[in-house]
Image (cartoon, rainbow, N blue to C red; front, side):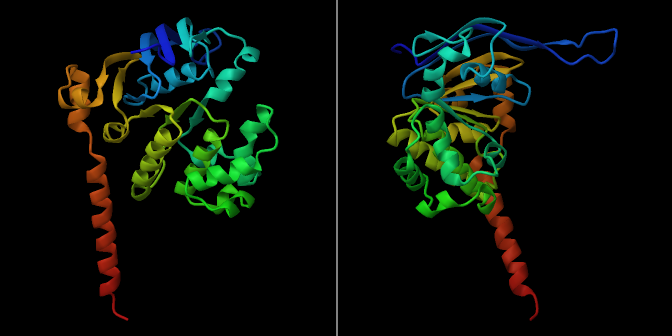
Length: 282
């Protein structure tokens, strides 16, 4: 691998839970335990693990939204682990995030066009109407969507708006944190395919976080498996999935439903509902 776009070395994150009594401090939680990670330019890098494995903590650190207790994190060769916020403008431009809940990440009081323009305005580019129309088209929404509010769209459409907003400052890295887990299974594949098309079109590096192994296999060419704040296995996605070496990875894969099976179940249920409706007497 050439110089990575993101590099983490011996990253540790501890935090203290709120106290439960007046005499005892809250317990210390070891969220990350010496994580090492390299993500190359143009890579589609998946991070998988169960809830509580540390994957969300890790991406918050990689995005500069939190600071590690110890260790080094570099983005495009620049140390960000202990950098002051005023020096992270380049990171706010070059790394953007798409979150799990599109409704929670979109300001309901703002029109869609203003939501998409917001990162550009924050970076000093206030005149961005042409960029808004370009991005709405890229995510499959009409230009007229710019004058509407988030509540006027479906969950899948709101996630398309979130993706457009993330792409507005022309980032180098897109971090997607469980971007389809809140969506109906019938639209998940559409959003996943859209993400992959946009990653190719805009030459992005993708960091994709999920507890769903089948989704990561569909999207990513490299995967890291996390458990209890550690990376227990990593490698090419096909190799890890077809020949898992760590017992935890083996157990995850054995228990994981596939995206194809989930879609098949959804189609069967929809067909059965239609048949029941058609059989009702007039």
